[in-house]
Length: 297
Length: 82
Image 1: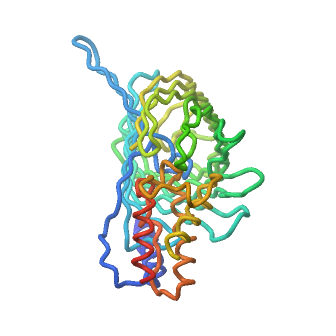
Image 2: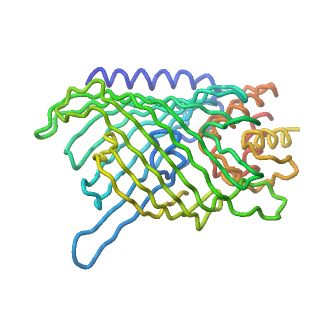
Image 3: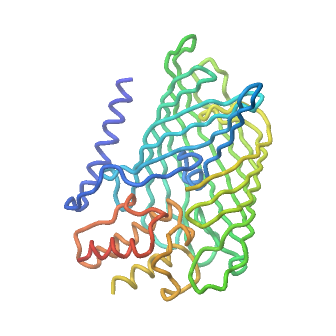
């Protein structure tokens, strides 16, 4: 545990030292901005709207679906190429065969390599405390996510919306590699142990946009229907816990219909097929269809 | 002129085809398709621009968000280069 405290201290100190290079005459608030998203785990997830759905029947059990995270920026730990945030996430789904109930709080950092039209490194890192209510586990997770970012006039854009056929279609292509370290603490009958998971993910989406308005005002095309696909492969190369985790995968395919989309805010209805697991977020191995209201503010 | 330079940088990062004359000052960055990562890219480009104006100020990634308007970005940069 002391090693982790030392690591967190050194990381925070290093970023703070880097950010001290900037002009310090501005009276900046310590926390800045607020975002609601599905998760802040990766740059890709940070573009997904939060999902909320619940039913409270007169008789019988309540049902919940929440996939949401909130964040606020930390001004003293940010610079022109780094953003730092405090994040809190809650993932709960009671309708599944194996329910999910997992909350997380921690620190998120994103770094974008300086550059031009070429492919640039986009690094997203998290240090967070995770409580899994279903498994009765407490853990500390450190994740390091390596993705690409490209905004070019020609060729494939990475982690940046690309527009095709004069704005009739919008696509997004976001592959990444990630390493996860999860340290479990003693909790009830659970023993301490750690897991190291390298993973690879490929996600892509394509949207049919609403017809362009005749207004001369420059805006991004407005999405009407969007198809998303996401496939993740992980392998626990080190596992000193007794949960037996080895190879895991998660496939998700979704269709979203946007009935309100102003650019800054959107409400969409989404249907998705999910097969596999996501151990860090407490999702057990299973397959299910999910229909939900998705909100982005 | 700072205003036009900032507008051109915003259009370049958005990847949208258009000129600065088409850009409405009241438009939110999100209506131009900006995501959090794109705001970080914009902060880098604007920081480089501010440096070319012999200013010692810098532009932080957290200072920009998709909910900001074009005018708010222009005002922020004007303040930094003045």
